[in-house]
Image (cartoon, rainbow, N blue to C red):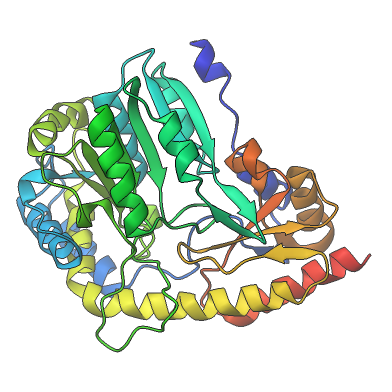
Length: 389
């Protein structure tokens, strides 16, 4: 076995979840998914496809109908995107790995803004790259990017810059002005940007959206030219409640998309047709389903953060994006031990900050994507009781 594989850390979120395995009394907020089931229209589309016998191989890059639908959907949110710049993938994480495989050689330097979902730092390391971490800075519970530090880290020797905004776990979101600075800098250094934007529709501007208003986090697709060294990754998991379906896509320059077809062949061959039919149904429903989800999650976020801010010793800020409250408890420095104690002794399941890198040690991630805001309040009550002991 390659040593880099042996050195990979097992999921610390799973480690906490395993501590509460089999307990029906646990309020689980550790995984990054909603507790809502995929909408019936999306499930029906997959069933119809299976019943029609669509169980054979598809094109490596995805069904033409889905690529066209994605082009229309993304163009409605950003600058025009052609279907020739889109590849359909078997999950967002597969899209991220494909991007790294296409761009990174062993020994290349990859800069990653952290804390972040650990796959984003592990993927280039698996390929033999040298990963350089640039950390967000926490203050009053909120996380911010030191732009001078990032620009100093990205040099002509940097092959790829990896960003995730809105960010898992912090909820930090890049501004459009920051994206423009980063894009201009990477154009000068010749650095590729891999932007994980799977949470772009889970974004909560200060002003509550008006009916019919399209809400989307700032994206590099709002600024970049088609030939820019940019790969933007999306997923159906979060905004379309399809975590278990494993359906993603990426946008890249058309010449790179042509080459990605070969990589997809060597990784998964293709995405199942019935899953792609489900994706088409999700996109058709998006004008109604996504704003409704955004509104529900805004209520969940405000309910949870407001309740947490009233608990002594808890430091938490209102996240502008994603689906997580990231909190710190005064006097607690071992997030894994704390998360295990909360689940075993108090039936509260949270993700330890250390799962997202050393930069997030001492923090806890709480997924607020719940159908029942009251369930979030029950969790806060358990946390408050635990801290009062």
